[in-house]
Image 1 (cartoon, rainbow, N blue to C red):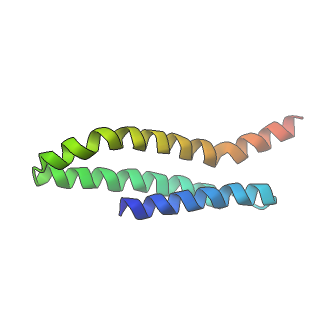
Image 2: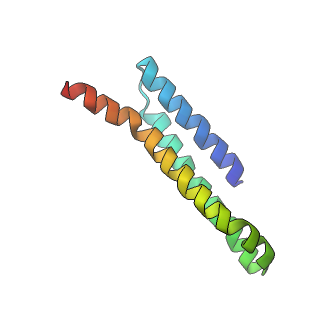
Length: 95
């Protein structure tokens, strides 16, 4: 499930950027991108919870250390890309 949410978040982020470049209202796409980023993190956490309940320590030891870094990096990238149009819009109004 987290993969599906992640793909939707990525697609929504690129739609957000495209709509900004095209001069259209991008805020709904931005909200969708950020929302699905949050849902991706929640789904990943749920997966880890299931592994703990099942006492699947091998899965936890194999996946969690590397996924933790990846999730941090991708979440930061998602936030930066999704708020870039707002920052550019405000910067353009100041000039």
